[in-house]
Amino acid sequence: MPRTSSEPASAGDPVGRSDLGRRLATRREELGLSREEVAERSGADASYIAYLEERASAPGIGTLVRLADALGTTVAELSGTSTDLPPGRPAADRDTRLVALDEAECCRLLSTHGVGRVATYNAEGPSVLPVNYVVTGREIAFRTSSDGDLARAAGSDVAFEVDHIDDAMRQGWSVLATGRAATVTESADVQRLDVAARSLPWAGGNRPLWMTVTPHKITGRRVTHR
Image (tube, rainbow, N blue to C red):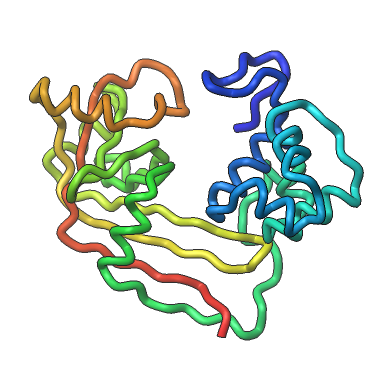
């Protein structure tokens, strides 16, 4: 969720960094571009791209349009005006198609880490919950509360799904893994996962229990243009 001006900056955030700066840097890194490459694409100077990423600023609409075009996104995405809207709202292109992904590509996409969804079934019916996760070897690992729905799913089969939707390019992918959920009890394994984790769970609160899903089936699909 977007951070308000009253909330503290994240550790590692440059002092004065704005939401625009974070979104700009995140999108640039997603594309694997350097500041110099973004500058060349947008007709700006690399030092100005660094300034936008690291300092609060209010560039004009012309600059935002060029930056959005250089990063293959929209002004709304860069400025954050669409953050409360679900992805996938723009109309699909006529030449799109759905392509099945092989297991190697599915594993590669899973290993990018981030936020996924765990689907379980209990006495009250199906439940789908988002989690921050990491991948270690063949295991998908996430932290949760000790008395929640996910903890009670230990020992049963669950589904884990992760996806990415790019509204600007009207494309995306999804990967679905099914397997047995288990709690992590060995202290050495807990310590290893604590080290592998890149951040605390976004949901906050006390979530000390590490759980893993060992997939026995992984499938995926991608929306592409012909």
